[in-house]
Image (cartoon, rainbow, N blue to C red; front, side, top):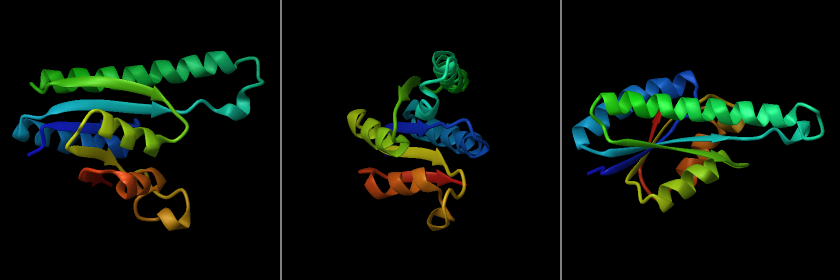
Length: 140
């Protein structure tokens, strides 16, 4: 049923919990997994002297999160690849990557509220649910 799964990993405890479900589901379905991490460069610090080093560190951490997760999944016998994207809208990147990669399921953890309207899910997961064209599996 699910041949390609997109796992949006944001390096939070909820994402780590989602990884447990992802691993089981991918193994049961024989699915390929695409591990995606989206990071945002903090534009408000653009004029500071250490901005380039900050962006470099964010990118380095993003690649480490993805490569560690891909390695863990591959050790479990799951075909996995990683993608790191610098983007302004995390939800938009997740939805566009899901469409571009023709995935049949998106898995992500919910991070908690950023605003009162996002009390149950979080703003990224709410947007992904709203615009995704495939099923979305959320883990709190």
